[in-house]
Amino acid sequence: MVLTAVLGACPGSHFDPPAEPHTSAEAVLELAREYIASGPGDAVIEARASQYNDAGGLKGKLLILAQRPGRLRMEGLSPTDDSVSVLATDGARFTSYQRGQSTCWVGRACPSNVGRFASVPLDSDELVGVLLGRPPIIPHGGVAMKWDAAVGAYRLDLEGVASDLGMAHGRTQRLWVAHADGRIVRTALLEDGKTRVDVTYSEFKRVGNQVVPGQLDVKLARDKTDLRLEYRSIDLATPLQPEAFVFDCPGGTSMEELPCIAP
Picture 1: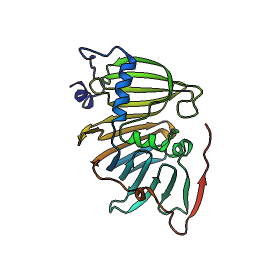
Picture 2: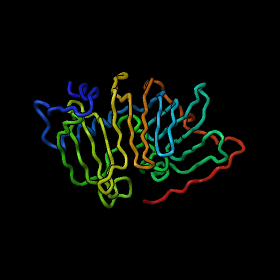
Picture 3: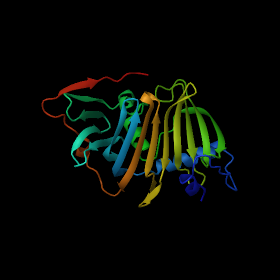
């Protein structure tokens, strides 16, 4: 299959379009929408994270609890599985804390606050979607499409609606969409022609009746950050309880409220 070849491809590979390619950008976009809408509701993911930026490098284990709509808990773990950092949101409020710090950050889970951690202004449910391989599609006007022979997928360029107050404002989104089932293999957000965030999905696997990525490679313009998440185990069958997404700031820390800021 074309997609299988792409996922194991080497740089410089070339992939011809399918024998019967889609000719309508709207048809490919609808395939992508259907794939995004089909995503799982609950996920428990154990991941290996590695990050490199201007400040240096970090590696470690990460526990991700995700539930749509908008509930997320990301917990950094030590080699002995002790908690070293937590970001938790119930969809309305969030808490962020790193072991050893005197401040515990709290606030509304609005796009500007989520953007402090995700580098783009997403609401919490959109961030959950990104982690599950179901990134949001920005409000847009025109859509351009071409076959990307280097990726082996359709590339859609969506021009953001200038009046939108979210991540579409003054930006362009690129989506790379697989021919067969509409899965997203890559997405990028551009501003003034420069890529602000670029997410590549690979190592897809079937878990139950769901197809989910096993690896995310994220490039952020902020601090020239490269982040890789390798999903070592994915559980989509365990129902998550609301209390899993609530984190109380440790005693002795000061809580600081982060305000929501309009773009």
